[in-house]
Image (cartoon, rainbow, N blue to C red; front, side, top):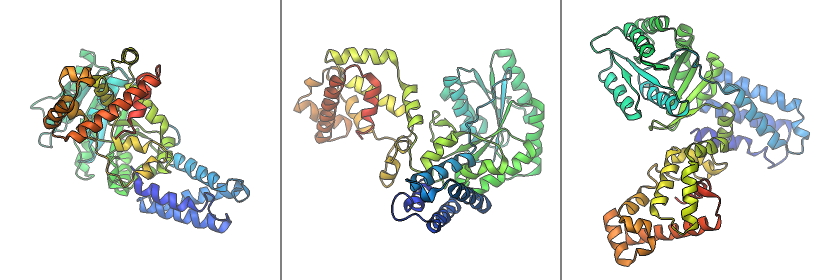
Length: 442
């Protein structure tokens, strides 16, 4: 996420991080490089110029040149300005209606249908809501089926008025159905537009008027850069939407849309999509994103994700097993599943300060634990509960069954033994500490 931009900003600010003398001239040169980095990220020229002008004005006004740590102060000013540029405060979602109606809009291919499912899953699991997904795309082949597959995957009902080709009627009927059947959130997935054309814009305006949504969200493919910002402005002029969703931030995105969209449409980014899984949705925090762009990581978000997967009851059971030397591969496997649920591995590593830069050339596969899981699943129940039973002949059988080598089985056994000893030493730390330790194993 934003690897290119992060690297260029780091180089631009390098001279002011204690390397060489600090003068008004090289502050200006540094900010020129910052502006160039923003332009390369597809940020609008005027926005990039205004950004660096504001930073320079604040820098000279705060006596950066005579500061004991001018480099750190400049980085802070850039970080603060980036935060403001992306919205400043974190924006919430309005769920005040009964039911709360959320209208999804955007161009075709932006990931709108998938994100509708992610949002429904988020509201169901994190906010204890009972959402209803509504299929209003009557034009794209298999669009309704796609939403039904997503709904089945997350356990959320999908309303589809089969045979009705009027999206306004479908949306209206869906809201009435939600009221009658106890759904407290309605998420209306509308047809994606191939381009901003008058007929389709009029249609979504009519849907908006008919259902009066509490939230109208515009879904943007972040990989389209400045084009996404221009499209958002056109949609906002017609719909006056409430917020922006940025999808595909886990892809090869330059970051221009995320950085500049707020200043163009004056609407906050509310959520981001960071992967293909239904759990790959995050509330957008401008300050945390600024930290990540500047290579400072995002420890707060990392801890929050860990806490979401932390189970107090399971942790107590695990502690008892450790105390009795009964920690086995089944327990090890559960911890792996918890780490995987936290999200995309590359995204997680990017949240650790400095790690993103150090690992930028390392190919981090989301299936990092696949080999370990295959080996454990090739063990018998007795072997998983009593690892000491695993001798040379058993290792050979396990390796063959998992499609791995005896050396790989030995490596896992060694890692497991180290983990067991560590867990014994830190008795009382429980599952949370184990999860932290496991992040560095693969």
